[in-house]
Image 1: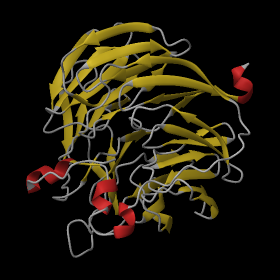
Image 2 (image 1 turned 180 degrees about the vertical axis):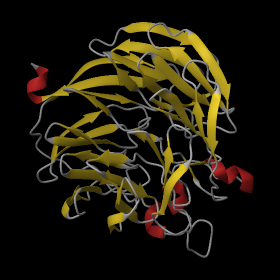
Image 3 (image 1 turned 90 degrees about the horizontal axis):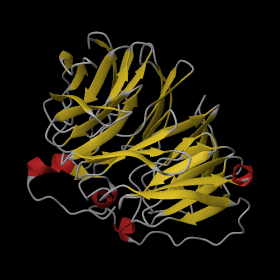
Length: 388
């Protein structure tokens, strides 16, 4: 990401990403992205279809990432375009132009399609037709996609508040308030809903567990302390994907901390000093993540033991990795998708997509991988035997 410095201190709450923040204090980080190494591909990758999603993203750090449900891909652009696409062939099922300043979503649950806006609004649509069902007002911009479970829509705002809304009407059911630091990265960890609990990562390095029914605090754990001489040194955001597996939570922070927590109590099980604002991906015992320098890691999710580290994509502003069969896939700032072997960390395939990077991590559904560029190009890929 190559973003502009916002001069007003109040606007620092809107920092987009992290790569230019690093350049303030370390000359080594001013170097260009690592040049891509040549390799002999061992995996055949083929594009299945591509489709346009309006204007895509602007440069304001919006979290507009495709979502899948029941054979349909849902996607949106920052100008208010919302569309449903057949996941098999890329044909549009429906499209609406709302003129809403979308910033977070889509979130999908059953037939409920949810979007957040920069004006502190939540809109719900009928997923089968695109018809607007209701709207609700919250207290600030919504960057993380709204989620729904057990009859409650959960919305996280950039001011730290979390709302529980009625999925039929949008009426407010509860609110949880948590402070956030003055200076943060622009992004929010999407709420994770599991077994009647809402797990939320905060900009000050905390993870909280809330009762889904009424929003009361069940526990809070500080993953990393906000120590440092300056606001920049104290950046501790938990903005990436939190994963629940077995009875554990796997969480990463921008400030050198990857950790496993007991989901029922927040008790720290293990930690490793790796900095990542994009979050983690888990497949069985394997845990994959990209750090802020551009290393791709494979760890044992049970204890954090390192399997391998791929260091040939430094400063390429990598997305969160996703598992795709026996590979992990990451996107970079120049619009390349990289397939890497889970077993040894070696490159297996590479595809040039373009579009100045990606709107978020790829989305894997079965044997198909979907990726959306910041310019609004949505593509589907298959690899290996899935091509036939």
